[in-house]
Image (tube, rainbow, N blue to C red; front, side):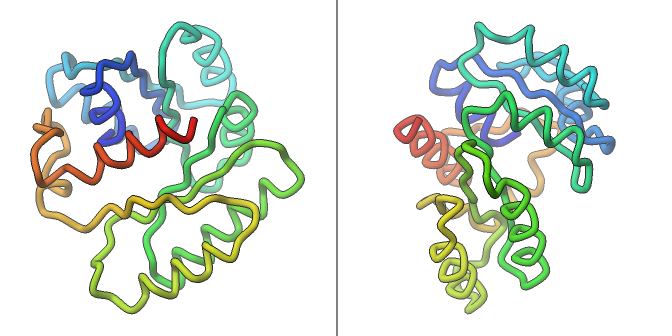
Length: 181
C-alpha cells in the first residue's frame, strides 16, 4: 500500500489488487474511507485475479498483493507482470523464504527484484542479506531499503502523508522503479 501511495503521489494512475486472504490492502482501503488516491479491489482467487488484470490496462501501475504459499495466484500475477517485486525482511527465515520464491521464477523471463523492508539499518543481518541477494543472478536488489518506522507501522487504515520524511524511502523506491522500468 505504501508503494501505491508513493506512485499515486507522483501523478500515476494506480490500482492495488488484493489477492491475499487476509485482505489487508482491501481493509486499509475500507478503513480509510475508500477515497485514498487510487483504487483497491479484493480478488481472492486466481480466476478473479485473472479477470481483474484484464480490466486495468489503462492504469500506469497495477500492484498485486499475493498471499504466501498460493502458487496459482502468484503464477497468474507473474504471467501478467512487467516486474515481480518481492518485499522481504533480513532474518535468516526471511532469506530462506525469499530464496524459495526466487527459485520458483528460475527459467522464466519475468524480471524480478527484491526490496528489503522493515529493516533496522544497524543490524549485521542487513549486511548478510545484501551480500546473499547481491550474489543472486536471478533477481535485482533494489538500492532503496525501507527502514522499520513507527510511522509506517501505524499508517494502516489511514491516508499517510507519503511525501513527508517518515515515508521518504517509499517515494525513493517508487522513483527507483519508475527509472528502472
